Length: 314
Ligand SMILES: [Zn+2]
Image (cartoon, rainbow, N blue to C red):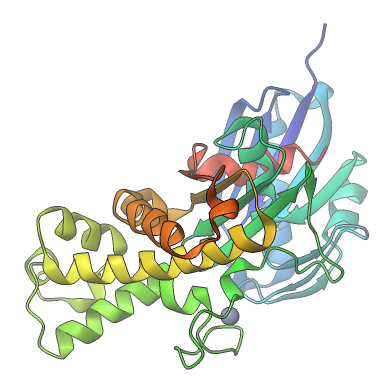
């Protein structure tokens, strides 16, 4: 029997991944290109076409559809990216564009929701009926699946976990609000805090690692420094972990899921520090009934979650 394959596309502000994925979630072929969003919509769409044609070259006949994960708010019903600030996109009819060119079924969904679908089917949430997926990277995004169904929301803004207010008078967030989880615990927030403390005179072994260049500080470097006993890194990662834990405890209390999965670039490099603090915070803050059967786990699919989830849309 001929295999049925799907093209998955994960569009991000920096990179676009495209792949051929089989029904077991296995990526058979994959390519990655730089988004270069500043060059404008037409240039990015052309690059998406190029990526599709590159991965599909040998298996055109077996492809039954194209699933796309896009950043920002996505009107899944009409296939439109309503607003994606990091792409400079507003009301982009992406589904129509891709469908008209390839004459294949095309579905589009928010990228974090795609991650949730993938972890629910093939990753840390496999077998769970209700789960929450949180991705911590340059920003914080999320996807919520309740009773097996993705919660998209009345205005397609469901699962915007990063914009949960955690601290009333906290730092200003990209969304304009103050004290959002994203403004307190995403990668840039952690790096910003560390830099500020160094400028204020706190001693740290990070300076040696980055040759005194504060612009070279990354979360990965902070995690390594913390592993080697650096006090500042340890403290700042704990702080971010505590804020994440507060967010997770709120979600556990409201939605009482079976599993909450944390992934994304920050969790990949610093998850071993953060997960412990997150779990402790949830233990201290969430209702006992909300945490009794709750698993809090690191993502299993890594960077491919978005791509695999996009393929599940078909
Ligand atoms: Zn915000």
